[in-house]
Image (cartoon, rainbow, N blue to C red; front, top):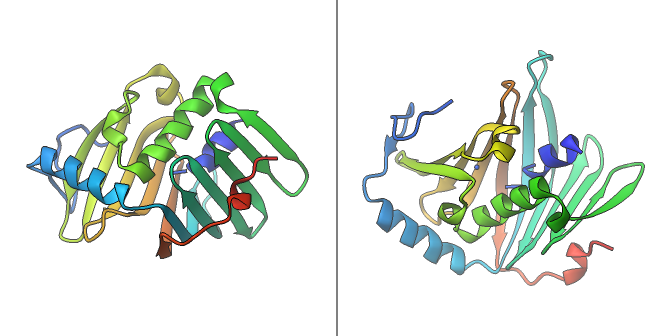
Length: 211
């Protein structure tokens, strides 16, 4: 199951809270940031994007690079489809999840598993601009000239078992997620970069079928 959790975010966020991050400074007006982030997210009904994912594993010298398509539809639908160098599909539709690789298809209900439920919430929080409502993380916000950086530090035992931190990079011009970096306790990390975004395109619900 760990591979499922790792891919999810392969989903959507070793810094100390409130510390200065290289290239970024703490955001001074957090209230204003929250309001603008939430308002921008409320305007998004759907997202279609290309993505590339780079995995750095402590046991391997070479990086593992994969590519695919990402889809989001308000309010609780996400599809992450890996196409290179292998096929892998993960679909979230409310509390239902489907995972499909080259050999089998598996279905889950996130309500029956606390860890799955938590990761589902993280992913949707990133899309909906509600990261600060997630009680399983303590979130600090930094900024550069072009980006905001949300540093999410686990505050519950469930998340602490999986991540040392999650970093979410937002484009300052529209508050959209451009990169997502997930760092595990052992030092492995997975960075997802999103490009060629198309916003508010009409999407068929069949894309998010978990049957």
